[in-house]
Image 1: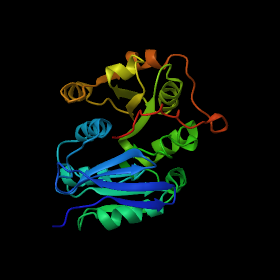
Image 2: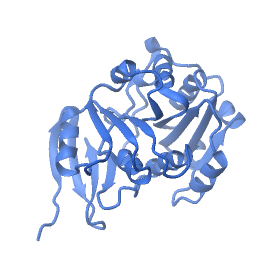
Image 3: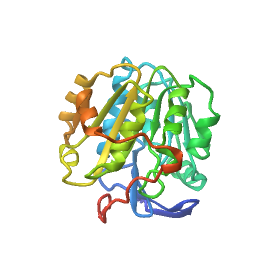
Length: 281
């Protein structure tokens, strides 16, 4: 009997815990300081358990023809769920993962190792510092999924940061971010205004209950200098077990309202989730 058992370890930025899923033989949930961070099925890396991860996956599926390799830059690593997804769905892709918590990376490498030849390079570094040192036209897709505890760090919310992200993307590249907020959406609106100052096209994906201000929740933002296939995204998100809405164009501008781009001097982290918003058990 080799039943997997939970693993708990103090890392650089908190207490990480890996918990096996009793319903899937080689699947694990990663939490940091009790907040769910990642879910990985080592036997099925294309399986995305979290709703926000599936929405990011839907956009990844739509940015280029199926199976075409991409160069993807991930800011925030966790258990490397989305890098594994890209490696499985777009073989031959090149990927960089930037994660500030070296201890977390070591834990994941020990218990949830990447398969040989995955094409994923992992970097222990601050996301913005690494981004600022990256060359122009470096990636096809940039995914920002960085949380210090349960909050997006302030230095990853600003106009200067967004300009660096746009610089690092190739022409036609797509920026993706996982954010969380609740009514009156001061943080989310400011992030839309910030990205709108840099990118021509914005897409907002979230559950209707979140957009109506009924509860705190995740929102996926996509930004580019080209239109995205919002019809395909709307079909995929509407058919999900937890359906979401896809907003773009005038609807996003109306939602953004009078919000202004965030300057470095004014930046604050994303709001603290209310108790139990992302808890487990």
